[in-house]
Amino acid sequence: MGLTLTFDVSERAHKTPRLTDSYAYRMDFNDRVRIAATTEWGVLTGLATLTQLGANGGIDVARVRDEPRFPWRGLMVDTVRHFISLATLRRTLDAMWFYKLNVLHLHLTDDQGFRLRSEAYPELASADSYSLQELSGLVSYAADRGVRVVPELDMPGHTTSWLAAHPEWAVAGSASVDGPSTRFGVHRVCLDPDNPAVMEAVTAILGELATVFPDEYVHFGGDEVAGLAADAQHRFHQAVVERLAVLGKRAIGWDECLSATLPTGTVVQAWRGAGARDAALAAGCDCVVSSPYYLDLFYPADVHYAADPGGDLVAAEKALVQHPRLRHVRDGLAWMARFAAFPDVPAGEEGRILGGEACLWSELVTDELVDTRLWSRMPAVAERLWRDVDPSRDLDGFYERLAATRSVLDRLGIVREDRASVDGNPGVQPLIEMLEPVKWYRRLLGTGEYERRINGLGGSADERPYDVLTPLDGIVDHLPPESLASRRAEVDLARGAPMDAWTKGWRSQRLALAGDRVLQAELGAASEALAALADVVDGKSATDPATLAGPFGEYLLPVAYAVRRQ
Ligand code: ACM
Image 1 (cartoon, rainbow, N blue to C red):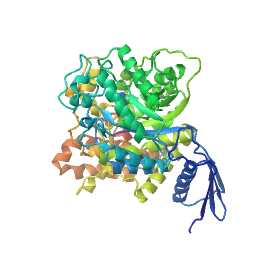
Image 2 (spheres, rainbow, N blue to C red):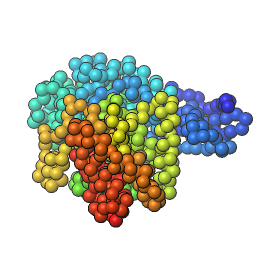
Image 3 (tube, protein in one colour):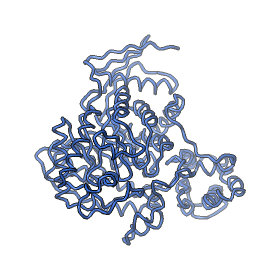
Image 4 (cartoon, helix red, strand yellow):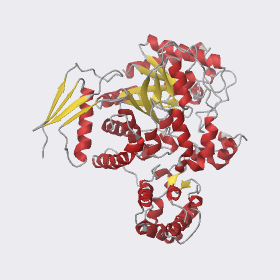
């Protein structure tokens, strides 16, 4: 059946969306569908709902009235650690529209590269970078989907790539730089805030950004600054914010920028836990909450769904440490919680929570892997930011919606569903589909550094198993961060459903793996554990199932946590 659609917009259109614009809409279903909204962003949002409803097998409501809870519903994509193509960014914007997300934050510069082809300073640009014209095209593409684009120049730390071209811009004491870094982690390298050439370059590049990105906000980074005194760092932030103001822009920075000298009106992006959000609000700064929405940490969707930007984030952090799937990194999570110390900057008036922003840092993400990493969990953040949810009631429904909406995106060709598999050996699929990558920073740190850091013995980026040159083409790279098959098995276990169909595959995969020596070396331990788990489930073994969860190298077998001891 064809649909007749009519639209009704009551306000004059702007070319690009703004933070304060309405995304509310009303949709009536009679002999035709009528969408009424104040702005065209509201109409676009109504169309997203219509696409979701239609795909869910029909429309059985007469009327929808809908508006977002938060005005800032964002996603940050790190385009530096691995280059993310414009085609992938466009696909990402398509899916953002579908899930009613409205801010794409582009992390454009970092130690490993400079993805902006500045015309004033072309020598800074990495080989893989975006021209100003390409970025301008992306801004238009985003606006057509109701999405704002906020660019980030990360300064004064995370600037090895700048200093590779201009070593004279380094503050005294910076580590020597012989090219953009190939390593991950914090580098002891900083721009010199007292060098006039640095501020001249920063001003010129911000000016270029201001012409390309019409959004009111520009992100100046400010995170993980090593090797600069706190007062110099804050003086630098202040100077950058003032230059942005001259360009007619408002500033947003990571929460390290918070200080008594931060100009009022600066938005703080809280990434270091509940304390960062609360310190920013107490200082009178508006805040975008990111700490519970780090998609690079391989958490399952329910973790992100449980955290409310305006809620009790301390309780959410405590729940994280108790989450069964995160048991193998519990000591790492507890270790990180010790670092939360924030300046007390009292202000007359509390800041507001503008919303939230998920972050996809790309140390372990390539262009090809973006869809799998993002859309497995991002819908949980999107729903969280759109409406007030009660995870204790809504979570099962969320997982149903996740499956339904993912298959629509797949059918529309927007998101490429990645189903990890082994070519020519389908017999191992019952194993592959139960596996997840280990969580938190455990892959990035490697077992050695992980153990040493949390035991207070230090650690060094030099010993990490990954750098920008490490190929990300293994099974662990293609695994969705959350195994939905595992979740289905967990639901069956909880219901007391027959498990034979599961345990048959959990046993047979061992034989299928046996003939493949390479695969056996990588997955042998997990394979044995899954077969042993089948015996526990079938009452043939008294092994403690929790010992069968792993980790096995970089792999986890989370279903083991859901099996009751016989
Ligand atoms: C950050 O994750 N360094 C903002």
